[in-house]
Length: 214
Image 1 (tube, rainbow, N blue to C red):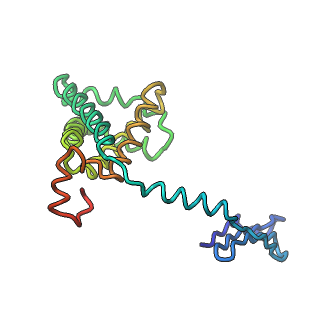
Image 2 (image 1 turned 120 degrees about the vertical axis):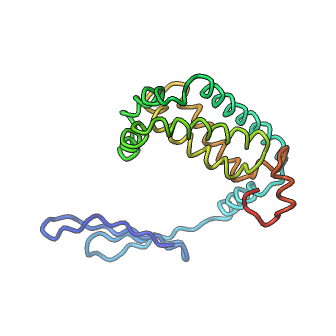
Image 3 (image 1 turned 90 degrees about the horizontal axis):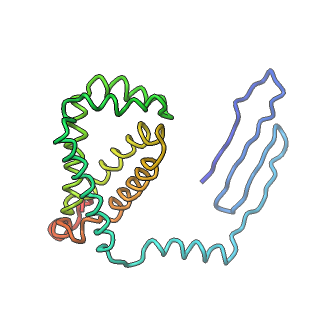
């Protein structure tokens, strides 16, 4: 792998151009300033560093019980269902509540996401109210019963990421940490295939062993 870092070149100024190169083969760092000759700095990994990297790599391949992760999955699935049921019984589908909930998105840290919220979501609040409500219900059922957990976890992480940007960051408080926790857990569920324990994905995995979805 080679990485080059170059500031924009301006021939009419006295700007010094730096070139930074990482050469992973011989483990060298090359630094060039202007027209000078490159300075080669050897970077060598000692035996202790290699051992630490090996231990770190092997730690991701340890056999463990998915049942522990399944308990967390079921709890988060119940949370999604309970939130969706409150929306269904509380008149959320009318679309009147969504614009007020997203008012804090004016302080969204990303302008492109802020524009999406106010130019697409808010004008179509009824449509997105249905998407949010029934999306949360579908994610919750999937996590609770362990069916297509990898797929639903990716959608859930995307859903909570939007909440994190549009609501949690502007408001701060407990919602900030809660959405961070949900995003991390859902990504772990997707990577680990958490539905294979205490879930239907375990049965489906035996039926379709080559499928990435289980």
